[in-house]
Image 1: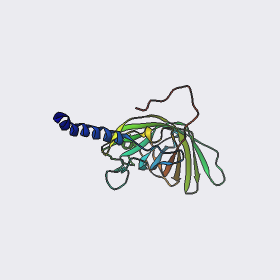
Image 2: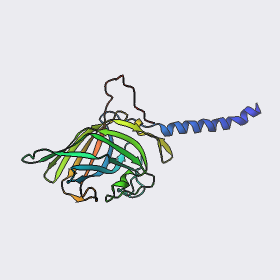
Image 3: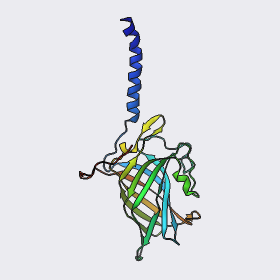
Length: 223
């Protein structure tokens, strides 16, 4: 009996540890139509080749807590993103606005525990661990006067566990069915990079998509 009594505190500690580990990984799934994230980015354009890339950082990510290592900026953001190369196709101009199509493709979300984003260096937004890869549908960039808009939907192709503030997390738990993204773009260019000499600042938000129809193709791997 004495041995059993002395072992109870140990069992209790193990139980608490197991429960805390489980709770650390418990994340809130965003309902369809709920805000998943907010972000700030830039569209980097090479007019000579008709190509572009987008990159930036997240200012809010629902369920992840603080996203910055200091005062919020691209230089302190733990979570950044960058697209694969985009092919641009301008459409005939309209009286009050211009439209450019960006072909469908993939983009990636990165977690960098030692952030160092720099608008003059595209590579700085793809440092760290890839924690999610998503698709994006064809984007329609609409420029109207000094501003413009864009919207696209995307599916979550894969995700990976990461540790933030001592908690083990996975973005698949937050938006397993993908997102629909909305952007407001400035038509006033800023300096880009040697490969993409023109950049346009933009910012926006994304909402969670609901589940699609059942398929027989199987589920994606996320871990």
